[in-house]
Amino acid sequence: MSVSALIEAKQAWASAYVGLSQEEINSRVRGFTVMVRAIAESGFLTPETFAERMDLEPAQAAELFAGLDAFGMQFDDAGNIVGAALTALETPHKVRVVGKQLYAWCALDTLFIPGLLGDTADIESRCPSSGDAVRLTVSSEEVETAEPSSTWLSVFLPGASSRQLGPASPT
Image 1 (tube, one colour):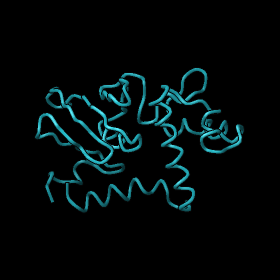
Image 2 (cartoon, rainbow, N blue to C red):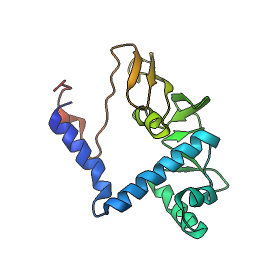
Image 3 (cartoon, helix red, strand yellow):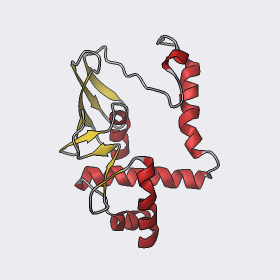
């Protein structure tokens, strides 16, 4: 992927934060981290636990939960979050972390979840092209091991056609 394509990707993802103060951005990141950690701990996050961990009034947390469906969060029938990049619901991307078998929504999520949890994870997924197993050990700092060693990850850029990107390149 070219440097310009990476810059374009960063701009596309950053657009979700346009107009927010740094405090609002930090609060969103903290809230997402609380969600992922709760799912790792217990498989779900209640609005009450979220309110407690975020120092919110219960009504504020309930209101926030009501709007999170639009951001793709997964909920159970009781209104608890059961998926926020990390989930107990089976997907093709296995994440063994904090002594539990969990799953990630996508391959890219497996790379940042260990950092949010401050732990090392064993990842197993399948190459969508060949069907071969791909195994990683990812710490909170880096990818420690990769099998096969030639493993790489491609990312679809929001709003970009694959024709716009051109061939992959190490620069």
